[in-house]
Length: 345
Image (cartoon, rainbow, N blue to C red; front, side, top):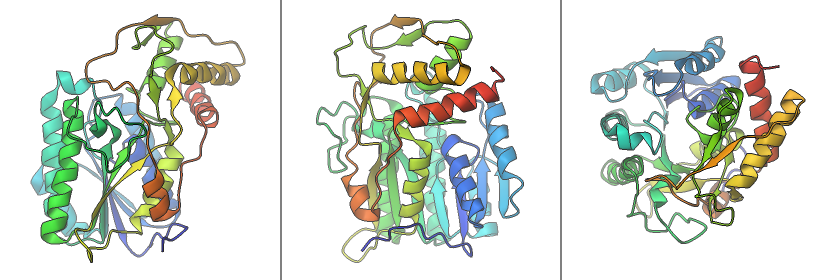
């Protein structure tokens, strides 16, 4: 029987890797607000504007039960020492080199962070036993999957980017470690996470930046408004709640390997053009003047997937949870934050 609410234990220690990242920050904040011990590690990479990472960290520092370590999970010694010093009970691995297109230009960092880094985390969980490892996978593992919606039982053997390959290998590595060392682990396939203080490399953030710098936005769909360019956009609060609920429900190894994989998506895909129009409306509201993006249409990029759409039935069965924030509500919160953060009104 699943628990219907989160059961965080403030006597236990939660290690969150990638703590200065988008999801890492919100998750840490939620745990700290519930008086949990949170250890955060982040290498503060320059993949996007580090000011945003420091802004997030600033908001976590006042919490007494927060400890921050600046370090890289791809350094084995750093990870071993972290586990030895803090003996975490729960590990949430969100540290990763993100981005599909960037993996075509900079493959090295993906292997370092996503493969070696994750291997170091698994090794540490093996030597310092934990209650539950939850790690970030990605909807990109579905690759060129034609079957919609994507279900966790679908074959994921056709990744179309190196980023997707690294995430698929994380799932395989975690499965093996769960099998060999009985480490309870859960992989989460995230579907386009967005919200205030999000990642500037994401389309909705980039579109907003382009508008304010007077540039057109590029839409990679060949200008075909009727094609299947859909995205399952998931608001940050829904992601955090999903992780929180799953954490206290580790897989049990009784009948097999204590490893599971879940989609965390909105289960309600939006056409990209509808998403863009909603963003324009929300910015119009935030600024009090009409906002219309100048648009340029281009062919779809290598490594991009035309549609993402999550089935969230498994998640709902496991923890009774289904993401519920509409893009109107979520994007309004983003544009309000954006205009305030960049002092645009």
